[in-house]
Length: 174
Image (cartoon, rainbow, N blue to C red; front, side):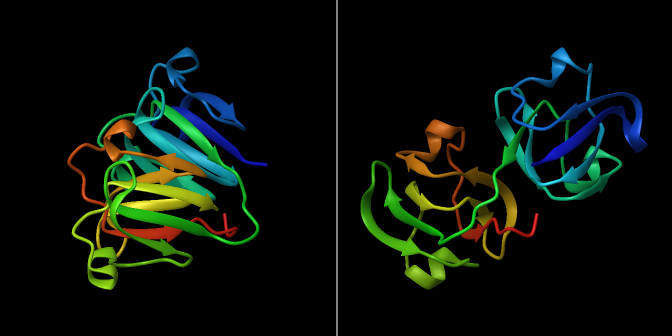
C-alpha cells in the first residue's frame, strides 16, 4: 500500500494532506503543494488537476521542494502506481490508431528510434505491467505514465507533438 504526505510549503512546512490512493484535485485539501514525502510505494504527481500536465515519478523518499525534481509549478494531482508482479509487455506503433511499423517490448529500451528504426511512437498497447515513456533517449525529458490499456493516440492523453523515445518498466523496487 502506498502513502504520500503533501505539504503546502517547501521543507515539509505548513498544512499537510496524507494520501494513500489517487487524488484528482489537491485543491480540496491544500491551497498549494510545494513539498512531499513518499513513505511507501510509487506515485506519479502532476502539475495540473485530473492527472494532466507534466508528470513526475516519485518513489520512497523526501522531496523538500517541488522544483528539486523538475516541476515548474505546484503539485495538483497524484496517482498511486500499483505494484506489479509478473511479465512486462508493451506494443508500440509508429502512427496513431495502432498503424505503421510496430514492435513489442518486454524490457527497458533506452532508444526506441535506434533499436527499432521507428521514426516516432504515436500509439501503444500496454499488455502487462506499468511503464514510463520518455520524450528523449536514455530516459530523459518529459515522461508519461502508462498503465495496462490501449492508447490510440498520445494526443488523447495530453501529449500532442511529444516524441516518445525511450521506455522503462516500473519495477517492484518502489
